Image (cartoon, rainbow, N blue to C red):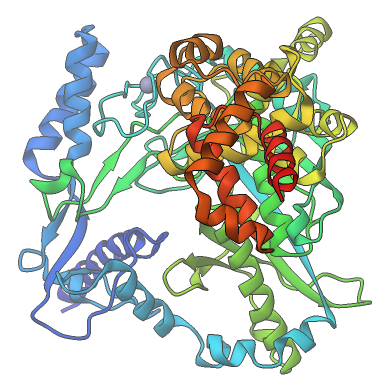
Length: 640
Ligand SMILES: [Zn+2]
C-alpha cells in the first residue's frame, strides 16, 4: 500500500515537474504566450524542447565527444550544432495532450493557428482577459475630460535604449552579423554557448563604448569589468548574458537637443545615468510568414545569428515629461550613434530599441508613482503615442481613486489598437544573480587611448546645430539639415564650394528633399554633387540662367549627373539678357495678338501676364524675367 502510494506520488511529482517545465516556456515573454482558445476546430500547437528525441541527443553526445577527444573540423561542429538547435520545435497536440492543461494564471499551454485571425487580434484577446476588468480603460472613456485632469499631474519618463553596434564581428567571437541572413548561418561554439568555449573580447566594442560615452558627455570608468546576468530563456544558449552591472563603462552624462518648432520648440538637456556594454540574445522565429519557415510552417525555432552581437545600453535619467520629449530624446540618440558611425540606428531592424518607463504623480508631490515599463516600440512616433496613452491611462486611474491598480509591470504597445496592454509583471534586479564574468579580464582604459578617441570624434549633432544657428539659419532649417548626417555633409560640402548659405538650404530642403521623398532615396543616391549645386546656385545668382531653367537642370543633374556648365552649353540655356533681342520678341508677340492688345488698351491691364507668358514661351524660358517685364511694360504703355 505504502509502496504503491509512494510510486503514485512519485509519478504525480514527475508529471507536475514536467508540466511546470512546459509551463515555464509557456509564460515567458510574448513569444510563447498562448493565444485565445475560444473554439475548437482550430489547429492547436504546442512547444516542446525536444532534446530527448533520439536523433538530436545522439548528435549532442557525438558533439561533446568530438570536442573533448579529438579536434574535429570546425565546420562539422557548426553543422551539427545548428542541427541541434533546429530540433527545438513544436509538436502536434495529439502527441502531447498534456498541453491542454491550464495553468494557475489562466494561461493555456498552446498556441492556436487560424488563417482567418491575425496574431495581434488573438493576442489582444488573451491579454485583455488577464487584465483586471477594473483597470481596463477604453479609449473613449479616456479622452473624455482627461485633458483637464492631466494638468494636475506630472509624468516622469525614463528610457532604456539598446543600440546594436555595427562591428564587423560579434562581441566575443569571430562570427559576422548580417541582418536578415539565413537563420543559424553565423554561429560558432562561443556564441552558441557550447561547453568549453571561451569568449574573446572584440576591441571595437570598447572603442565604440568610449566614443558614445564621450559623445554623451559621460564620466568614463577607467577600470570596469564584465558581469554575468543570469536568466533562462530559449534564445539565450549560455543561460546568462555577459553585461556590465555595478561598474558601467560610462556614467553621469547628458544629451542636449532642440524640440521641433511645431511642438513648441525649445532647448532641452536630458541626463544620462549610464552606458554599458553587453551582448544581444538570439531570436525566436515564429511560424507564419517568412521564406525559411514556409516549408516548416508549424515549427517554432531559435535563430542564434544575433546571439553575441555587441550592444550598448543607454539608461537615461527620468527627465522627460511627455511623449514628444521622449521621442526626441530617442531620435537624438539615433543621430549621435549615426554621426559616430557606431551603429546604423535602424529601429525597424531592431538596431535601436527603446524601453520606456512611465509613472505619474500629482503636481507638488515629491515621491514617485508606480513605474510601468512599455516595450515593443519600433518607431519614434510609437514612442510618443505609447507614452501619451500610458500617461492618460494612469491619470484616469489615479483621478478615479484607483491608483492602486497601477502596478509595476511590463506593457506592450499595440500599434493596431493604439494602446498599451499588460505583458508581464516585472522581475526584480536580484533575480539576475549578477557576478563578475570569470572568463574575461578587466577592462582598463589608458588616458592616451581615451584622448586619441576624443580627438577623433566627429562634429556631433548638437555642435552642428549650434554652428548652423550661428550661420543665421532658422531653427526649422537647422533641425532639417542636422537631422541626417549625410544631408549635413552634403550641405557643408556645398557651402565649402562657396554657395550662398540660405540659397543652398532652400534648394536642399525644397526640390532636392522633395525628390528624395518621392523616389525614396537618400542624398547619397542622387547623382548631383555638392560642387554642381554650388555651381547651379552661382549660375542663377550671376544671371547666366533663370531660376526656372535652374530647376529643370537640377532634376537632370539629380537623375543623370553631369555638370551645370555642360548642360547649359549642350542645351543652349544661357539666359537672354540682351534688351534688343527681348524687344524683338515682345514686338513679335504684340503684333501676333492684336485682340489682346486692344483689350489691354481698353483698360484690362491684367492681360500683361498673358503677354509675358507668350514672350517667355517664345524665348524657351531663357528671357530674363525682370528685363522682359520692364520692356513689355514700356511697349504696352508707350503705344497707348
Ligand atoms: Zn560566434
